[in-house]
Image (cartoon, rainbow, N blue to C red):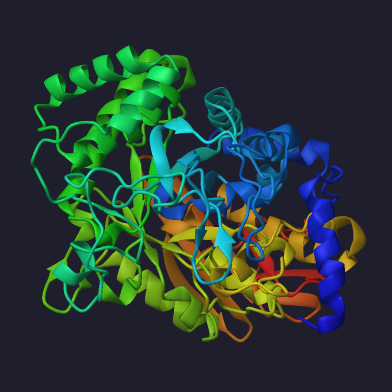
Length: 564
């Protein structure tokens, strides 16, 4: 980013924290939206082809400014290391406004919203509060900076009414840091040393991720007592008896010992049982004993099925509970195993349907066909029945693809058209800056959502329009993410995707890097002569003749589907 733009960015960030005017997307009329919604109802949702939107709750939209300051969190922090006002109410506002619908999103993953440590800690970059949600103090309560339990319930209900699933980000392996206001959990709950060296299985799981981040004894089966501070907190809040009674019921039902991980499993799965959360994104999965994830999945599945029984009128489909894990450094080329050096672990065998794939950002500069063919081969063979969640930028990867946002159209093409689950990181679709003046490390990746650019910069709206068209096409066609890939033509580049399963068939043809004007795309052997097609990118309709789809459009992309 040019230095002269940084002061302007700072002003935009401040203005954006207070909200932004709603703007209807001109690329899809109200009539088209209604038509799309009706068609979507008949399309099965497949997690392996989902279009997931990942956002930092505190950095997306401030829907309720009155909850911006709690627990006297007023100390000055390092750049972008304090709370900025984003909350559950802001996410709800954008769901209701149709922002995610227009982007083709069918699952939302937001950072943890449980109560965070009250104090700040110095990470060497100035003071930092738990704005990101990964420093839990009480897993049984929501942090008022993010919102209330009623608002979380409303978020789930609102998302479901739009056909959007909800992924809750969960942390099982560590508590928040110790501060003047936040004492360490008891010694039989956590270890505070050694710090992980990551050169073996033991030095990755039985250690603290970083200094002053107490590590839960997830490998232990030894019963422990609840911390006095937590009991006192529950008593002051008037819920001590309720919490203790629920724990008694949980441990009697499961037969688990009262070991640390089982308390956390109970507290986390309560959100599934009570609210109908559709899945978990599991943080720092490789830093806990892997058997804990299978146990978490078992209890989350039990809770999910129980919620369905109690709310038969609110069930979206019969998909089982979904879990995706962050095994930092895992790449799709590794197949089912993650190699610690002295031990390999198959996390897919411990409750995970998918793992986050750290490899696509490196594949993104390769020719499209090379990437698409590779992912098709790996997903159809060693990972058959499982999947990966692809991303190009995230909240803690300091080496994203296109850090200066100079290739936003290619980024959309790669991310949304590569086989597997797509994970849009908030602002990918609006070229939100990934660098900020004065910010250090991952804080650069966490600027406030650049809503103002959609009103002030035509280029930003054009970029968003491209992401929206590809995203909606992906949502309407499970074949894009979950189907089989086949190249039809190398010049111009044209490929097909097809999916068949459980009585549903879907097939599409996509062209990339096409010339402006008249197009002649080879579809022979996939769409027969006389087939009526529609290009979802331009809106053109056509009929296949002599094995080709011919039409005119000014765009470099073609998204061919059977005419409705």
